[in-house]
Each structure stands twice: as structure tokens, then as C-alpha cells.
Image (cartoon, rainbow, N blue to C red; front, side, top):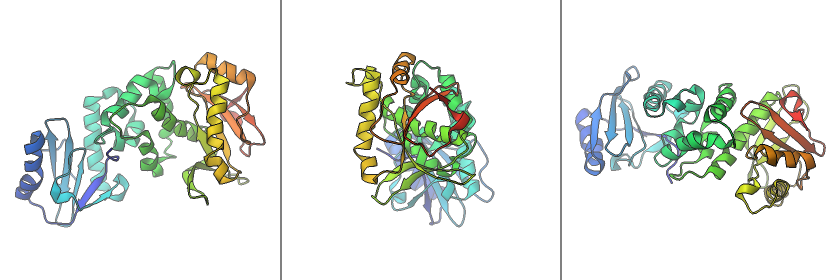
Length: 336
């Protein structure tokens, strides 16, 4: 499985002749390729080229006398195999800006329904154009409403667009967008579980907390978030899990689904951690009737403190808690 889209940097000297010999020719022989002028003017002081392959792959190349940068979701030419990889944030800003404009313009043509959501498109660009995941990740949003049952694609995308446009996760773009994965297959359950972390981050942000993802703890693994209140006080760690509804698992009832999933989490990662973290159980994959059963019984989840909640694309979040939760979720949730 290929990783999210990243640049390769070459410190060698490049010319038009070398680009045609070392980049275009091997790609043309394997896929059929055309060397084209990019959509947008390149960074000041750089030359730019665009290579389009017959199988739909794409590569961008820009260079000056000091360095060259390759960005492609195709087979990397052998002359670049030993080069280091860099994220959009790790290359010069003008280079990153030009490349992202190129890709967003392609997205506008290929999937205008997705490009309509500006910040979401930008945030997930490393996976929307990854070698293996470019079709599956877009299809997940298009056909599975980002994991919300009985919801429209537009509603689900608007929900995450509103949150991502706050910029609170921009510094963690690769860490978070990579969770969606770059597999060529659509796995709605796994991908919906990845989106759970965005839902939890939105809940915490709406409650006034500053979130930092992927907190390494002394046991050698990571918990999902550190939630820090600008007002001071406790700053707990938060671990998130998402039960599969009974319609998609062996559990016979929604309540059993919640208990079984939470028990798996608490008997594993949280048990190793030794306590102190808040468990978030996200039931956003549950239909209305399934959630009614859960909130009616409000089952325990083998861990305290815990928050069991369900979010809807409208922004409404219903929740109940178990134990003394060191978080003031205030108006971010409706207690049930």
C-alpha cells in the first residue's frame, strides 16, 4: 500500500533533456506519458513540468539551480529512488502552494462535488491524490456519506468542512488525513472509524478545548488526543472508539455492540495505559432506532470515565457519561 502523497527532493542538476531522458521516457515506456505545461505558473525562480500518464497517474516536477521537487502518484523513476520524501509543510511554501493549486484544479474537474468543500479538499489532498487511495477515499465520501447512516453526502461533507475550516488540525494534516488510509479498496467500517477521530476532535473543540492528536504515553503506544482547556484545570487524555452497529457485526443488539467494542478497547490499549484517560464511544454509525435503544438503557462501557455520544451532520450531538468525566462539554452536547 502506497503512502500519502509526498514530495521527493533532488539536489542534482536538471535540464529539459535530462527530464525527458530520466523522467518522461521510463514513464512513457511503461504507461504512455505526455510532458505538458502545468495549469498554473510555477514558483518564482523555478521551471515547472507536468507529466500525465495514460492510466490516469500524474506527476509534477519543478526545479531551479539549487534543488528539484517531484510529486507523483505514479511509479517513481529510478533516478529519484534514493531521494528523501517531504510533506507539503516541509518543502518551500511557494513549491507547495503551486503543487496544491495544480491538484485542486484537477479535483475540480474530476470530482467537482468534492472540490466544492475547500478546506476538506485541501486537508485530505495527500490521500485524495495518493497512488493507491485516490479512488477509494473519494468514493468513501461520495457513496458512504463519510460514515453517517441515513445522511446525505452534502450534509456529511458540510459537517466536516465546517470543523476543518477552523484550522485547529492544520498542523497535524498528514497525521490525521493519513488515518483515512491509502488502500485501493473502500472499507466503510475502517474509514468511518478514522472519521470518528475528527468527530471527537470537533466535539472537544466546540466545548472550548485545544486538541493535540497522537499523544505518546509511557507504555510505548499513543492515545488519540490531549484536551487542554484555555481556562486551565485538568487536561485529560482522550481515547476514541466507534462501535459497529448490530446490523454490521455479530452483536445482537445496539447495547451489546456498544459494550463489546468498548470492552475490546478497555481490555487492550486503555488497560495497558493504566487508567486516567477518558474513553469516547462514538455511536455516529448507529441509525435512529439503534441509538434510541442505547440512550434508553445507557449501558456501562467497562471503563470510567467515559462519554457515549452520537453526532449527526446537522451538528447535534447527544451524549451520556459514566463516571466523573474531567471535561466540561457544556453546550457541545445534549445530555440524554
